[in-house]
Length: 496
Ligand code: AMP
Image 1 (cartoon, rainbow, N blue to C red):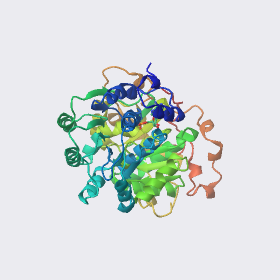
Image 2 (cartoon, rainbow, N blue to C red; image 1 turned 90 degrees about the vertical axis):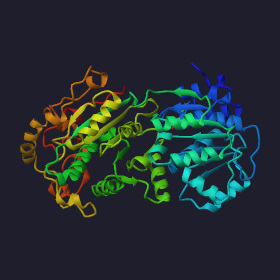
Image 3 (cartoon, helix red, strand yellow; image 1 turned 60 degrees about the horizontal axis):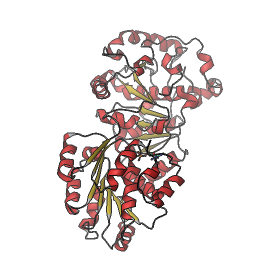
Image 4 (cartoon, rainbow, N blue to C red; image 1 turned 120 degrees about the horizontal axis):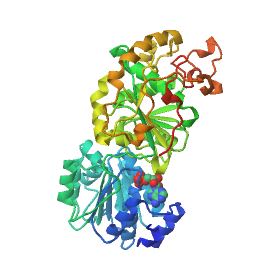
């Protein structure tokens, strides 16, 4: 196994990573760093969570250790698709470069130009930026890119999704032909392939995981509900989500909930908060200071549930996220991989639950063909109460009633669809059983032998009065299901 000391990194860098507690290089680091230190271009195909940031930052710091910064002419440039990712790279740089005299500037939107201008005027070794903000500075005549020795493009496939490719091409052309380029992408769609063919020179291609694979430590399940009416789908999905969260109990230490649209991020967050869940939203329309605060709080464990859009949460490095929920099935199958990759990081166990309705069948098919295996099915039919309170549709009003119908009513309503549901929740015949399938929960929910034991003590109803609008009363796996608990909610989750 490669050791950090085998890599010809600057001793100051080695000291910093030892202090950061890193013992051995991750596979992407072991593969990319030797090529990078030889001065070669590197094409890294790796997801976040693999240690890819250090795989370009460590050799970059080693290389920049020789030489000095000049005013307005950064010596290296790191482009990241979102402000959060750029800020994350900057944080990593600070850790790894702490024993060097290298300077950096972070150019991201939502921060005043003045401070950023001052830093650039003085001269920086490393400029970390989002493409739009970098070009703004360039167009204001504040910046020259002709001194760039090393350029990094991080999360290129996300840049593509966000429409940044023309900006990236332009920035490439503003930097010298002699630069060294590190180019990272989790997937290689044709447009990205074209870009690398144009701007990278004989790159060393390093790949750590097959395209579109998710960590084996993530337990996945698909929870399908059949909405009682089309216009109730959203509120029944919210009921379902709350039941799923409650069912996880103590095992859920923190979670990211993904929605496809920003407006739904807001609606869902309001709804969760109304039910007293510790939730906050993050999406691109929110003020930068709010986004930063929310993220910091989530990272520090001060916030339990982060409701997010894909772009805002892309690549976020929060080392221990216990759960990911897909409130909406992502429209791009690759996003499924990115989303669930927020949990199960660095070999930890994680759980990813996706809520779907029959209308999502095509999207689920696309995900399953991308990951090349069926998602284990769990029955959500009995979780989402058909009789959802009207107040749920307007989450800024107080809940008028508990969202659950009396158990008896619930059972009679849900029994029928549960039977003909097979058509929507039955997985397609799989070519071969896989490990995940073997662990899949039963298709048809069974009665729990001892559901009452599963309810945490604090979840015992305290009487009729206290049930109204009180989240605790809905805790525990049996909530919303009468005395019926699907197996998947009761199962212990296994890592690996
Ligand atoms: P990244 O894929 O760059 O987002 O990194 C994922 C996480 O792995 C970050 O929290 C890093 O601090 C951490 N990390 C990177 N390299 C190592 C290493 N060699 N040993 C332990 N942790 C690491």
